[in-house]
Image (cartoon, rainbow, N blue to C red; front, side):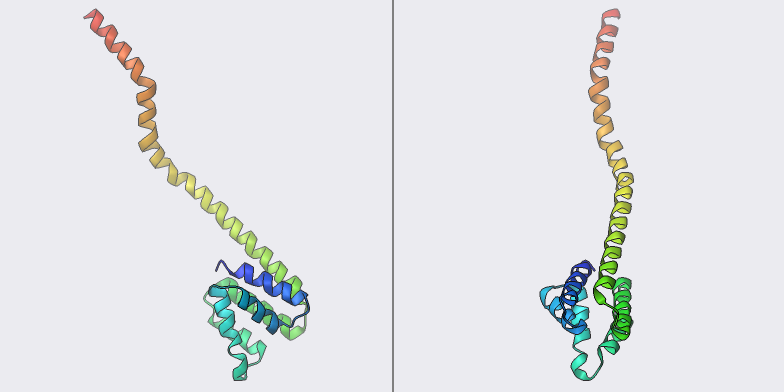
Length: 148
């Protein structure tokens, strides 16, 4: 879920600005699009049906297919139950998500060098040999034709 970090930053900003958790999620979902904001919108749609915010967050954690979204829902649920400040918690989660994404990108970059090796050997190496050894081969053939 690529939009999760953006959504969490907006929720964090709204919460630090003084909005409640529910209002922060509502504002952030209104400003973003994507699967994470869709999941949070679905969670918010449970509130008018009589579910508490904590129960809706638990339902989101149960229904979430993405492990990061599940962890965020659990963290938000615990913070809303204990009354802990949401801003620092979300900021730490966003930093962790970014670090995970960076590690994954570095891992993919390392795998790329292995994937590039075979086309390099098949395409560039023969051309290099022709360019480097071609003139020498012509000179050798000319020298052999003079001797023979």
